[in-house]
Image 1 (cartoon, rainbow, N blue to C red):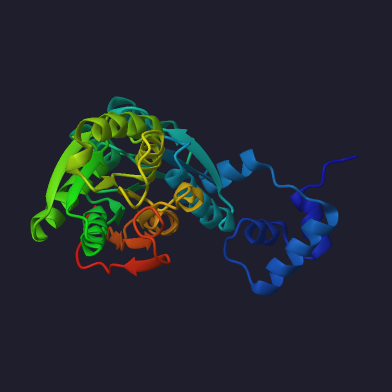
Image 2 (cartoon, one colour; image 1 turned 180 degrees about the horizontal axis):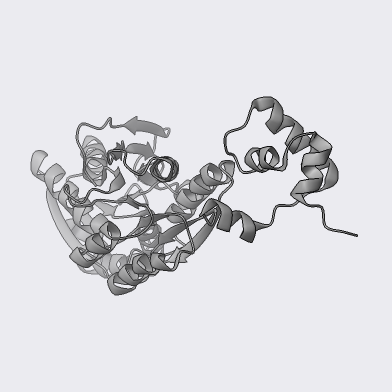
Length: 346
């Protein structure tokens, strides 16, 4: 059976080939023409030649989403939100892993190969080399995270600093006064700003002592190992553990259980990111949501806007944190506390 072409579609719709092409490619065409052409294409079973369309439009109709760990539930939430936005605009989403700082720079530099029309990237570490690579990229790049103020880059940020303040304020209101913070790598963006937020909140509280430790990665295994050592060596010195993310928090829950500690009676535990893991753990993990899905949606919309209008002013958007209180920190009913953004943070 002969392949249906755009000429066949144009004949069936009763329009010129040029009009049919404009209607199918999202270019200027009347609503009536678009309706007739799409109906004809559907009736004939027409499938556009992606290679020819890319050459004609000068676009690949592909966008990239790059993260350090594609298995992390936070990044999965972001990916799902990004995919919904770009799919509605007839783009495909390509997923990439950034790896370490050098690999992240190489990934951005690979945009010169022209395999995508733009990228959303969530780097753990923002180096001078990465900032330069993003500024020199041949296609738009939107950053999920913090960039230098003069980078000229569209960014969508979480407010980790205020989020940590919500956690500490909650624990203090529950009568916890001896807090331990288990952080991930402090040379990462989340590690740096979550530590800063924890310190600020502790300093603002009254009669609160704190312990700080850092692990090599934001994982359950790292959290478990650190929590076992902490709870064995300094159990009498703490009544709450603040984990830098939910994965570390889940590891801490497991460690407490293995050591025979009652949560929250003996020890309160909190996390950050409010992932599905926090919801299904037992007890449920009190956690600060940093709006992963919302940040993903906003980043995708900024990227599409930048592709459509390259000269538009860059934008920085900050999403407010929300504290979801669950059984790991209180015995009463769960509830939610939201902080509204005042200024950009990360």
